Image (cartoon, rainbow, N blue to C red; front, side):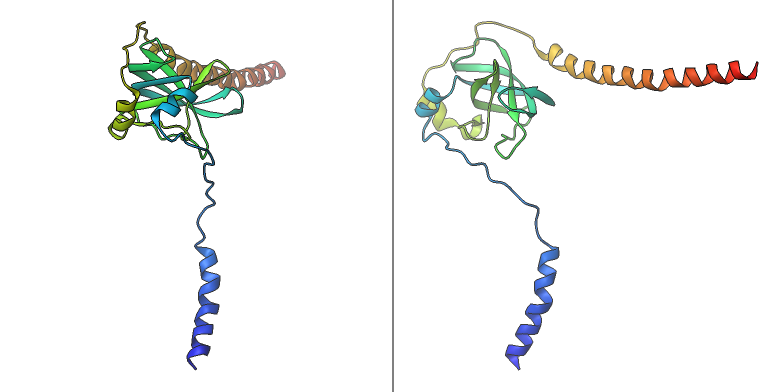
Length: 188
């Protein structure tokens, strides 16, 4: 009788378990460098910086894909960067690094089509979690060239919104004006 009750319970619960199936998740398949020295050698840029702003963008690098653009205020540099601000592209994928504006990071980045790209497959981490890497990396330098990319970083967003809005207005107003013209000339 217990076996029958167990089988009956299994027959009831098994179809219900299919209803609560989680979404498919894809793992990021990559090899993270074992230490900071190896990561320094494998990446074209290594710096600490504060994430000032982020936005989604379509960028055509090696992959024609969606990216988060992250504007950093560079604090210390070990390799590859000279300016006080830098834009780093972060692919929207399973290998995406989860940056938060206002937080400081140790960033390992590479060039792709002339732009800096970072991923979860590097040793990039919040500065609070990267003390051993920072210690291992040794001496760093401050940025040599002061720049302000914040205005242009946001301007491209406003330009895109403005262009789409203007296009929508034209696509609505031109046919509407044509219809009004046809209506008025048809009545006379």
